Amino acid sequence: MSNSSSINEFLLLALSDTWQLQLLHFLLFLGIYLAALLGNGLIITAVACDHHLHTPMYFFLLNLSILDLGTISTIVPKSMANSLRDTRAISYSACAAQVFFFFFLIAAEYCLLTVMAYDRFVAICRPLHYGTIMGSRACIQMAAAAWASGFLNALLHTGNTFSIPLCQGNTVDQFFCEVPQILKLSCSDSYLREVGLIVVSLCFSLGCFIFIVVSYVQIFSAVLRIPSEQGRHKAFSMCLPHLAVVSLCVSTAMFAYLKPPSISSPALDLVVAVLYSVVPPTVNPLIYSMRNRELKEALKKLVQLVLFQQQ
Image 1 (cartoon, rainbow, N blue to C red):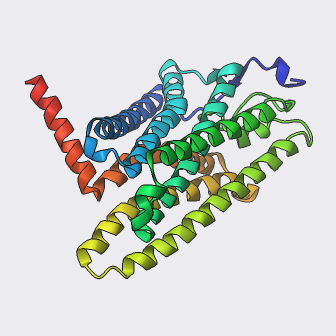
Image 2 (image 1 turned 135 degrees about the vertical axis):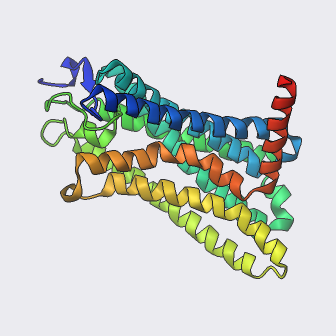
Image 3 (image 1 turned 45 degrees about the horizontal axis):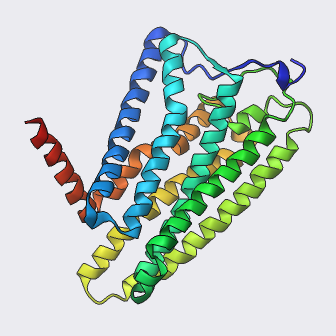
């Protein structure tokens, strides 16, 4: 193939060669997808319906759950459908759409996690000014900025990636259209523009990560000065889930895009891709609800209400 204009479709990675293993892959991804839909759907409904949760922290959590639902819905259903139909094909336009929405949602989620770290910092280190700093208008503006940043990031990466001539075939060694795998199909040095754009994005991500780390250093310093054990426990219960989510997202995504070619292999690339694209949207609801008493009570009320209506 001389260039990308002659490519009508891409061939994704075949996770198995036998129908039985393909069916197992379908059932495994179906279970993960349903768990993500249920967990994030419950959080969205609980936050939207319970007026006690109409606070900045839960407003950002609602946005995070929407982004998680979008992320996993962008890549998992197509992989499931391919396994069920015993095919590897994805159209050129569908692949471009996958890249766009994946970058959009992942970048917006990372920006939102940075905003959530700032929210926790203000709540614990500047409690007397919390209502003023984190007013409803400010929260909406910060959430909108996170979504807009993700959109701009996706627009740049998608436009740049699919303007690069592709002459190394059309086989993508991943279960979804991942930019590093598409770049392997490029001609000569034409991929360097997108590599440079990825480096810029990673530098921005590193800046956000440093901001999060500095925020949490100050947060934990303030928490350790709280005299009551109950107060420290409440502060940690608000911060530790967010820190766990940030650590999971950042570590896996950084490894996926920065690992040296010498340790790259199809099996390792697949595991890392699952860790940063499929696992976080599934486990985030569990992480946030495990240590959050208010959210657990709201979810309990929601489940009881649904069961009562069914009776």
